[in-house]
Amino acid sequence: ELSVSNLSSSVDFEGDPLVWLGAGGLEESISFLDATYKKAGSSELKEYLLMAIGLHSESPRAIGFMKEVLLGTGEEDLREDAAFWLCQTQTDEARKILLETAWKDRSEDVREKAIFSMSQMDAGQVVDDIIALAKGHTDTETRKKAAFWLGQKASEKAVGALKDIAYKDEDTEVQKSAMFALTQLEDG
Image (tube, rainbow, N blue to C red; front, side):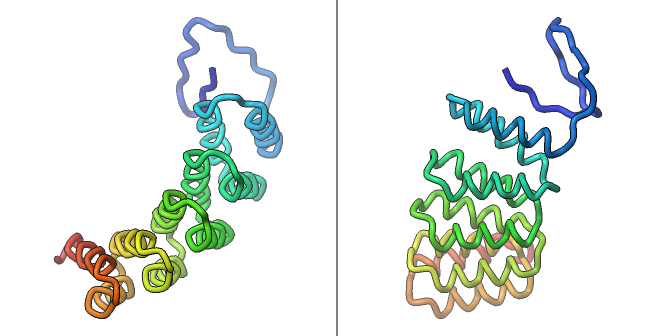
C-alpha cells in the first residue's frame, strides 16, 4: 500500500511500526518514485505515484517525468493525471507542454484535460493560448472545451474573445459554447 504524506501531516500506520531512515532529498525521492512507477502493475498505484511525483512541483525532473507520461502511449487516465499535475508546477515549461498537447494529442479527452489544466495556471500567456485554441483548433469539441475553460479565466481579454467567438465564429456549436461560457460569468 502507498500513502503520500509529509512531516506536517498525520498518518495512521494502523499499528505498523515506523522506522525512520533519515531525510531524503528531492531528487532521491523522485528517483525512487520514478523507479516504482515503472515497475507498478496497476493503474491505481500509478495514479498515486503520479500524485506523489506531482507534489515535487519545484523539481525539473518531476516536470520531465510528467511530460514523458503525458506525451507517451500509456493509458489515457494516467496521461490526463499527468496533465493535471503538470499545471500544478505553474511553470512556463509546463504551459508549453500542455499547449502542445492541446493542439496535437490524438485523444480528445487528453486534449480537454490539457486545456482544463492550462486554465488552472496563473501565467498571463495562458489566456492567449486558450483563445488561440478556441478560435483555431481544427476539432469542434476541442474548440468548445477551450471556449468553456476560457470563460473560467474571466479576464477582460477572455471575455472579449468569447464575445468575438459568440458573434462571429462559423461553427454554431462553438458559438453556443462561447455563449454558455459568457452566461457563467459573475456579471452575466
